[in-house]
Image (cartoon, rainbow, N blue to C red; front, side, top):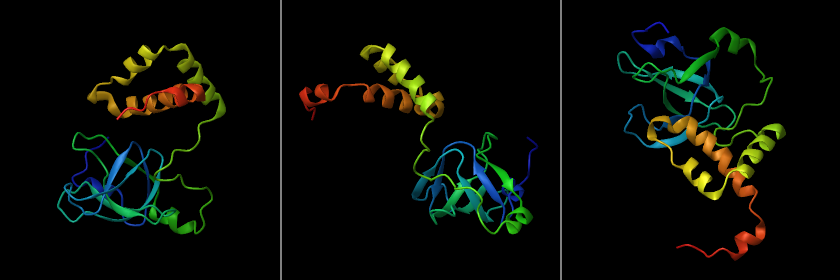
Length: 172
């Protein structure tokens, strides 16, 4: 990736970007401002404008489907890109109607049945202790691990008979 003096300039007003990894949307340009939501990988956004600070990495964006808007970082301080250009300003202008549905900001699309079957197959092979061991992840690899953990735990929990839930003591 070529270094850009002001990374936000690579994403001009009116272009569309896609989220490459989960990122936080904030109410204000400041990284200390209130969190509005968390965007999931694959979410499409319209860039309304770049940040106001010199050499800014911040973009003010809108999720067209939900109408939600806020500030994101386009690139991490480490250089890791958070978004990529999907459509330039001219491409966006030439398409007045969306041709595909945008993914929700807050809901993952349903997994294909074969993926669910594979996750359930893995969950069925694991003992309770193995599932708990899988839950112990390090902070360094939390994003990919949480995604994997979420699907694994969901498949494992879905496999627990309803009678077991009814007879389980309630923990306070």
